[in-house]
Image (cartoon, rainbow, N blue to C red; front, side, top):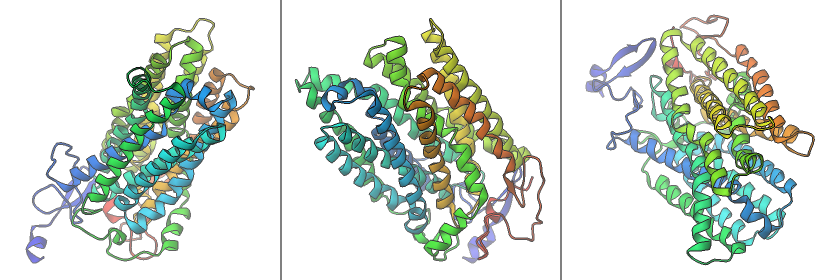
Length: 484
């Protein structure tokens, strides 16, 4: 221990302080100071890849139904309104699951919580696919699939614990961005898998969709077992309930630390209209292209997949932007970047709806604007979770869960307001979604950190005072402090 202390030195990386033990790879808490996806021998990298692949399977499962909806309709006798009800059911499950996953991660550790959730959802999804025979069964199928997206909270919690402040924005964004591509993969792969089951295996069409659902179930089981087989939640083998300070945390203290912080609520609101917009588009895009442009199931799925596929680069770009502006402008830069990028995505969302409402809309132009909208909306999601780890270290899981749940809440509210019933066309509903997103991005200006400031105000505390996220027990966020 003495030898280690001698090697320890305080390093400033353009405004972000962390400890270097000589190798430059980890800080004093064993967290990686940079994201190195190809360094496969390092536990941080192994955990990173397990986290995003596990969440990839969850996104695939959650969005497996929309691309094969034309095949499921006759088998389950679905009316047009049943699709909207099922989407609300899926989003409601996501909300419940994410709110529950936050405290679970803080108390049990993100690895165990994630692995168990994947296995439970796989079993429930398989049972729902086997026994569904009516619209109610379809809603139940989408509900249990939506529960799997609770793993997003575990994903972001895990990354926030194993990566230092110099890399946390990028790590969170890349892990979530690559995982979100699972929704795009489902749009492309599920119709192809369904056709293979019908044409090559000769399975009747009324049963084929059930067989096709073996694919997302197998993915959930495989990744869930892999995550549980990983030896520890945090580098260095610390027990999952110890967090960063080695002290046990009571359930209610953890919950109070997150629920009592207004910044968690505001981040949940703004996230509801960046990631919430993404959820809406991924639920309606395939049907939008099928009906508006009369595309077949495979082509409509491919066009809709363009939105989700942008996650591979857009969300990580948001994380990179968050870390880079923080090096120059601190937390103020992170907040301004979030507001600007999310506002641009909202304007493009309005434009997508306007273009689709034209008498003779151009497919190529509509897809191009939709891809641009996806890029900004998803980058805003990455920027959001570049801020989340700085709110409260002790209640990081709760804050992550509240923010992530905001995405589901935003999507549910938007779905009920604009996409349910016949008051609005799909094109009008998409434009209204963009307008609401533009308004709900404004509260970012109210977020303030005592030692880091906000968009318009500077810091209100000195370095000797308790930091943001400190909960009165010495568990402050000194290691997450950006000094500029």
